[in-house]
Image (cartoon, rainbow, N blue to C red; front, side, top):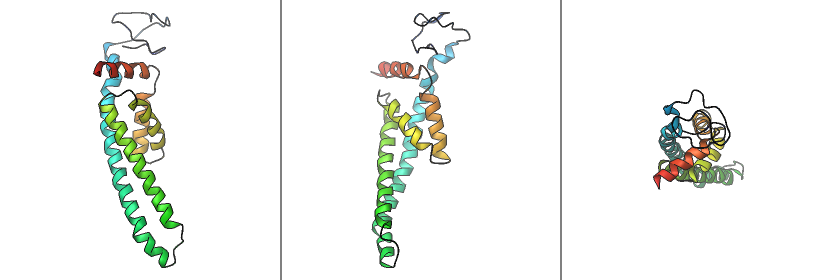
Length: 158
C-alpha cells in the first residue's frame, strides 16, 4: 500500500504516513496492488494497438512507393509520395515504440512506464481507440504515488 500524498510504501495497519504525516483514512488492502492489476492489461493493449499501426504504416509505405508514384505521373501533386512516406515512417516508428513499451510493461521494466505515458499523450489524438488507450494509460500510470508503486513492482520482478 502506498501513501496518496507522497507515494511512500506503507505498512499494513498504519493510520498515519510516517513520511508526510497524512492520515490514512479509508485505505483498504485492495489499494495495495491498484497498479499491478492495470500494468499487464495496459501492456497487452499497447502491443495490440501498435500492431495495428504497424500494419497501417507498412500499407502506407507500400502505397507511397507504388500507387502515389503513378498518380504523380498522371498529374497529382509532386509532394504526395514524400508526404505519404513520412506518414508511413511516423506510423512505423510509433508502432515500434508502442510494441516496446507494451512489452516493457508486461515485463515490469523501469523505463516502460515513462515511455507509455509519453505515447499515451500522443495517442489521445487518435480518436476513438487511441483516445481511450491514452486516457487509460494516463489514468493508470500518472496519479500521485504511481511512480513509487511501479518502481516497487519493477523491483519485485527483479
